[in-house]
Length: 97
Image (cartoon, rainbow, N blue to C red; front, side):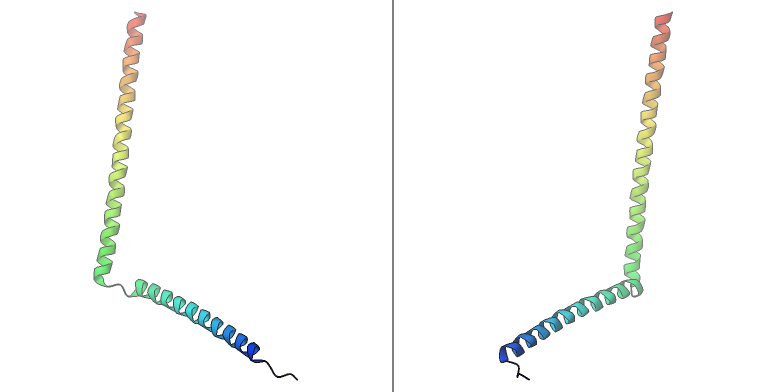
């Protein structure tokens, strides 16, 4: 049986250390993400919850305002179309008389 050479030992050791560092870094990131998710889910303070509710309420108000504006614009366009149709009917009635 041959005795391993020094370069083989160094290369193998470097590979093992490199893989260990990558594995450690991966595990740290995973655990930090898990703790952040748990903290965000279960550990919100009352102030943070109030801020989130306020944001959600404001977003809902903005959406309602946009919907109302769209409805108003649609009604105005319908009125304009009706007025144009009435004018066309009057003109048609005036020409046939």
